[in-house]
Image 1 (cartoon, one colour):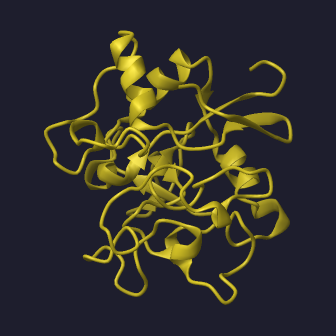
Image 2 (cartoon, one colour):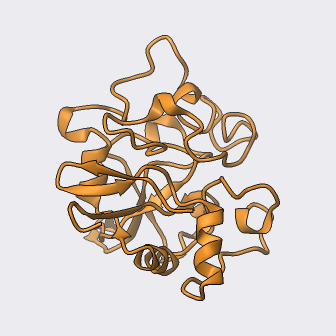
Amino acid sequence: MASTIVSVDDFTMDETEVTTAQYATCVRAGRCTPSDITDPRCNMGLPDTGRHPVNCVSLPQAREYCQWAGRRLCTKLEFHRAGGWPEGNEFPWGNGFGQLQPCDYANLGSWPRCGSDDSGCGHGTTEPVGSRPLGANQFGVMDLVGNVAEWVDDWMYPVIDGRQTPRRAVFGGGFAWCPEFSYSNCFQVVEGEDAGDYRISVGIRCCGHRGRD
């Protein structure tokens, strides 16, 4: 099942996050290593999650998948552009929520108790990709916010103990994240290349160079 590819300025981006079924195809082809199936919160070990985003994948596994698909991981600048930050948008769909609620746009932690049993808009986990079309950006890219955060192919340099320290990062927030941690300019720094405690809500989205995909 191939990804739908959307053109965004001078690059292309997958319309949705990489699904568990797509990642499993790469595993069967011998080009990807299985994601964690020992944790009951990881989708590859669960039934009926083929259309859910793959989660519990490390940065090297994300790179393996995108390379197998003939693509690459997205950069920080590409996520910024797709998220609408150059236009001053708070979120990929625009600013705020209007008369609606955050969960009308994205699968996030339910305000104000994000990270509790209200994560995933009350159902506590991921959902099939593209389930909340109101959250699409102007190009039609889905789930840039919520469901799972996505690995970024750039280093970040947060100040830790008074020093700039290289760290890996993810973009877009996951199903347990509060809306204010899912703005178009928000990148979450993570420990190591397996995302540590964040891994259950971290997945993959691939990008490419326009005209080469």
